[in-house]
Image (tube, rainbow, N blue to C red; front, side, top):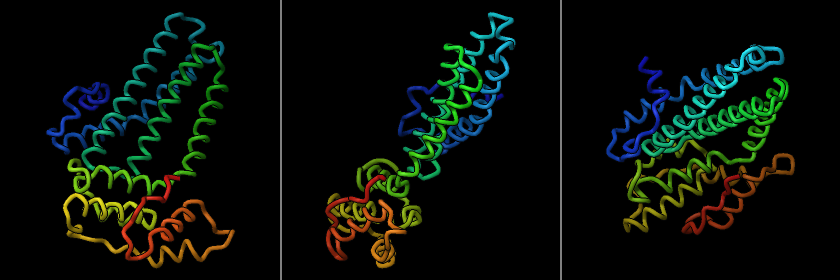
Length: 252
């Protein structure tokens, strides 16, 4: 019962307070996100069964508004879960998994809107399935062009306590695990930290720069990638020992 109440609890004005313990934010984010898939599938199942041609909706005028209310309730749940995840990111920094969760919840919201369109425009179940398949395919295709390690690293460097004066401490171990695409963001972290404090960070990580440079330099047309080319251009613009002048690795 507590999980159900947590699911449908709307965000409160104090939820974004910096004084709220991070553990509570984490627990509420988890309780709101885990059942989201089940509720979304339940909503889709109700629509496919109740709104099919010759189905229960044709026999009763009360079913259609009830289904719309249920879909609207699920839409509010998605928005609440996205808000909680955003609070979680503010408290714990961004990760590839958390970014993927935000994208997935956005896709769920699109699916719920498509359900509403299907009901209002009296579209068939085939139309709903095709529209959702198209939305999912477009999302996956678009994500193929995003440089997730660079996006995550750049966000964390921009919003960490060491460079902005507020927010969570930068997790250097996680930044290192993102690989060579995080090198431009890390260089920017070192530069911003030095500008803000007048000294270099107390802990400096050693990326395998030589191997990363070789990986994006010694390539032929068959292994060429746009993000690899952008990283190579960054290395060419910022040679070893030089002060980084840009964070040009692209978000794509």
